[in-house]
Image 1 (cartoon, helix red, strand yellow):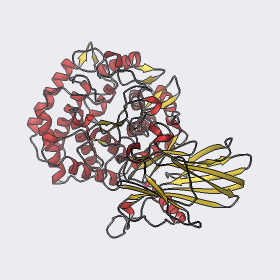
Image 2 (cartoon, helix red, strand yellow):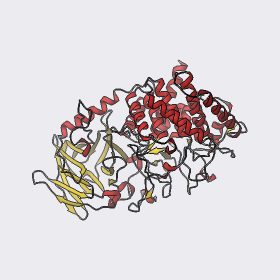
Image 3 (tube, rainbow, N blue to C red):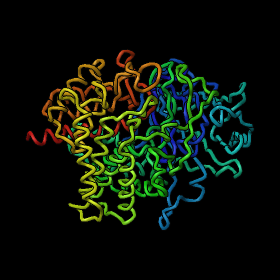
Image 4 (cartoon, one colour):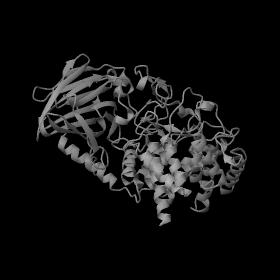
Length: 605
């Protein structure tokens, strides 16, 4: 069985990512992109689905780990009775041509993982075990020795994928390959794995030392652009780095998470593929990046958006592939037994075909924020926003699946209706305040109609409700003030917060909604959603409940694992992370909550 979700650290190269456990096992790796088929997949089953383990031969050796500053170079310090050694692991980011900006030769045709062992004291033997399972554990590759005694090399091939492993002799053991590497004080050994298209020759070995320096420098140079004043500095910086790691450095697409099908309900069916670009999540991520001085990412994402949604506005999707692909058909992968027996394991996501009305508002609000931050509006980008408003108006009377992507009957969700209001509000503002051209009178009329409807049907007994026709509440209501629809201390908001505290809190953390109502059309339940809990921090902060905000913030930040990662949800009973990881929604919400607390402290001063 795979390790607890919080035991995994992330390695990333800006195109894909590997998850390595505290025990030294890379249990998840897709190449060359996050949404490619897996090479190692034991995260969703056991060793049969593929892994690459490197750890001391002494079973009693203990490990502590950290990232090397503002990078994704992971340093694990192993200690045993025989000695001490450190393993530094990273995924190189290929250098780019200074003139064209394109990846250096072969940079786009290879994905590398490097594991460098350094002896600190005594002697330590490391055992590695390698088991390949390509194509979501459906393909057992042809593996052959292709090196020499002085330069051992193992090559595995199946279909379009090939991998070459260098640096240590590996010998067959059943369907695995095993080997031992030993280092003493001051000695080094480097193990490298390189994915490449099987129809090409194996790429040449990397200069490991230069690669480590260049990759660390790339991450540090990017992190040097982070602007953050206030508390939780380390938490915010690491969260921004995680958002950058989930952003494809070539396309600008921002993935919601690095994994698929890590369950929201252990043993249940709430298992989804999050390796794609949700317009909502990406827009909120973009706001977080903009708020911390990272404008280049904003420009790249806007360009990605223009490409992804080009064409007939009626074909607008709520999510796309990392390069803007539209075909995200959901299918089951029976080759995986599932994390903790949670099946089905899914690839693709059927939510791409849903109607989620709030997306119009999220995109319009974010592009408006980018405009205010100094990102000049192009004729094409403003044309896109006008087209989106035209399409939104055609959908005004259509119930939707909401931001939680329910698979039950569509509803008129209050958060979705407020987000539609925000879309037209930003359209009016763009004309009246920014001097752009558009039918402001028409948009104002639609905006006012939506407000009247929300005030009548989205409020019951003075409290915002989940959707028309119910008195249930939903944590998405906590996002209403950020749209400008009402103030955070509006009586309807305060009533909704009180109802959320009464009905959606579990051990002090916030659930998305009550699954027992059946609104989502799924069996089973789930755990508190970390983003929602950070939203409550923000609500507390902006309404003066500062002590409660700070206490909840400290608790939530304490749920990060030892290298600062958060998944989607948290199980307060089992005291463990739940759901896909690392989750962009959780980290961007952490950043917003930290900013709200910082603003509150500034106002008090």
